[in-house]
Image (tube, rainbow, N blue to C red):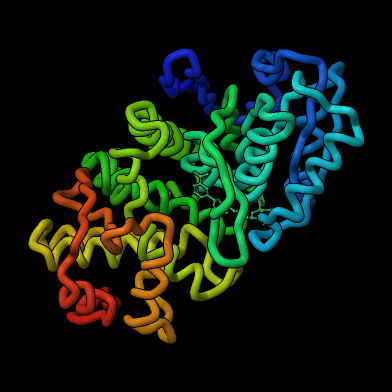
Length: 363
Ligand SMILES: NC(=O)c1ccc[n+]([C@@H]2O[C@H](COP(=O)([O-])OP(=O)(O)OC[C@H]3O[C@@H](n4cnc5c(N)ncnc54)[C@H](O)[C@@H]3O)[C@@H](O)[C@H]2O)c1
């Protein structure tokens, strides 16, 4: 087992990573202070892993609530179901909420933990690759509003994150690929050597070689943890983790939830952000091509939807919460492994990217 610490002073917590960790009762119970536990999962994940988790929590006073599966249920209505479940079962401030599932379960249960009785303790057990390397680490919690994704939320750090890499074996291939988008992102924005290592190990990683996937999850968690520990509330450098997200959120919002997975939209968003970085003279064409190639090698889309025009995309990016009062804010690359926030991008260059000029979609 590997452990990565997310250093946040007195709120420092550990991210434990290992195969078969769901069976490690002693470890899982070590961060639960009270007797009462409220497990939030969904129908799909519960059918696979809830029994194992409950066996590890035996002896504690545990209630479970299963949500319907899907991004379309990451809503205030679902949140209310969680509050009702907590109240009906007389959960109080000493309750620990445990999220067992992907990013949707983690974000929703996390926001419930941030707000129920002004905040209760929270543990993340992420079961998708995306959740293991990204959404479970760093304390961002949220639900969607019909007018925008993740618009209602809070920062609420977990007591611990437990990552059982064995759970990835049941993940549908498309979901696995979507998680690799965030893995590629970490290499692109923070560690050129890691990016090169990913280029060399695509097949073994997609085949979930135990050692390699364990290393990828650990390295990605280290990169995210290092950034979050410097800037918990995203006032500065944490914004670098949004590489690919300005374009990606526009794609997601245009398509409506469910058609493009979050990781797929971020993947295409990174291709576009790399393309814009190149047009601004920040990175070479060779680096932009390597990013596009690696994304494609992990079976991720490199081209935005055909029916999404440049004008629509600009409109969607303007309402994204990552936009500021001055306009659209981009996270771009100044080299492989080094990101920067850029405001005031020249519109003609942005249009070249959005109109897919010079073979953006070609490999
Ligand atoms: N909080 C953050 O910092 C942050 C960061 C990135 C993304 N997110 C959010 O994360 C969400 C996406 O998360 P996701 O990609 O995990 O999607 P998801 O939670 O919808 O999970 C994807 C699918 O896989 C299923 N699943 C989960 N684990 C499984 C397993 N081990 N075996 C088989 N099936 C399994 C789920 O039931 C679901 O059908 C989005 O809502 C996004 O906004 C949050």
